[in-house]
Length: 395
Image (tube, rainbow, N blue to C red; front, side):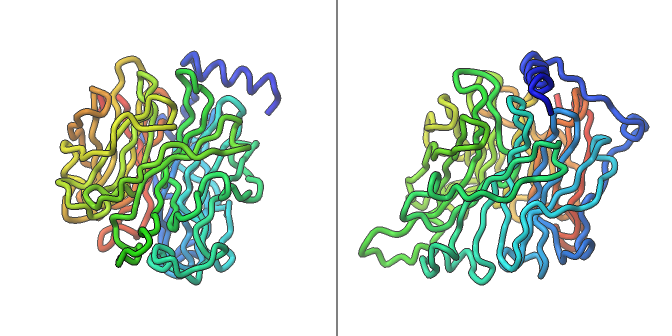
C-alpha cells in the first residue's frame, strides 16, 4: 500500500465515508459459513476465535489451531483464513505463528487505518507446561508466558515473524499473561487517536509468607498494553491489581464508545460476586480505569467464559455484546445491546440453542455485523462458525 493510498484510507475511516463493496455471494443472501472444523487441516481442534475487517473489506478470521486436542496445553499454532466476500467463503488456512511444539495463542488482532497494517498481538508459553504450573511459579522465564507482536502490510496475506515485547509489558512478579483474546482496538476519537489498545489479563504471585500457591483465582487481574506508533513500541497501561478474591478479572474484551471512552468487559473467574461479567471504562485511552471493575448485573445470564464487545460506529448506534446465554453452561450464543454506553444491556437475539463458547464481533460493512464463535452439538469446540447479521436487527 502506497503512502497516498494509506492517507486516503485513514481519511475515509475517520470521516465515516469508507464503503466496502458487497460481493455477489453476500448480496445473494449468504447468512454465514464455517471456516474451522475440528479434525480438518491437520488440527484436532480449533479454538479462541478473533476477527477483524481490513480497510479493503477483507474479513480475517484468526484462531488457535490445536494439534493434539481441544486442551490449552501442547502444540498450538495461531492460524488464519481470509474472506473477500464478507465471510461467505474463505481462502486456504495459513499459519501466522507456529508453535513448533510450544503454545502460541490468544490472538488479539486490529486493523490500523493510520498505517494500513494489520497488527496481531499473541501470547506464548512452552508446550510442556500448563497454566496451573505457571500460576504456581514452577516454570522458568523462558517456559513461562511471553508476549509477541506481528504486522501484515498486504491485507493479511502474510505476516512478519513474531517479535517479542515481553519486557515492555510484563512486570516482574507476574506469572500468567494472556492477550485478549478477540479483536484489539484502534482509537479514532479523542486525544489518543491512533493508539492501539490490547485488553489483557495476568496473575500475580502471592505475598511473601502467604500460604497460597498463586493458582487461586483471586490472583487474576486485568490490564492493557498499548502502542502509540502503530505497534512498534508498547507500554503497560491500566492494571487491575486488587486480588481480593471477590471479582477476579480474567479474559477481557474492549471497544471505543461513541463518547471516546474505552469500554472493557471481562470474565469473572469464579469470584463470589453475583454474576460472571465485570466491566469498567477508561477516559484516558486505556491508561487507567474510571472505577474498579464491578459486576454488570444485566449480563447475569452469561456463564464463566470469554465474550466480545463492539461499539457500532453510526450516530446513536448501540454497543453490542456476544456470549453464551445459559448461566450454568456454555450454550446458546446470544447478542445483547446497550443504548446507554454499557450501563445496561438487553438481549436482542439468540443465534442457536447449541453448545457455544468463545466469540468475537466484527463490523463487516455498513449494513452487516459478523459473529465468529465456537459451537457444536455435543461440544462447543466442534467448529468455529461465522454468522452474518443485518445491522438493523441489532438496533
